[in-house]
Length: 79
Image (cartoon, rainbow, N blue to C red):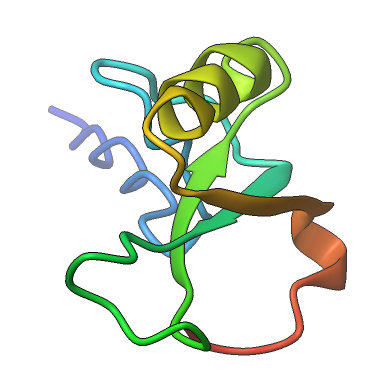
């Protein structure tokens, strides 16, 4: 009897979209902060795929939290 190798593990290192239930690769970085609890220079980051970029951006923008959106490849460092 021949052993079947296990399926390769998913690439858990690849950045994934922050939208609930989405497992697509992230291509956008949405930089935001909540001015009531964060200092002005602080940036939190949500990641988004193409399909969820507008939805996540609108969610943050309605609350006054969205600061900018950049391609993930251009992310300039940690939050």
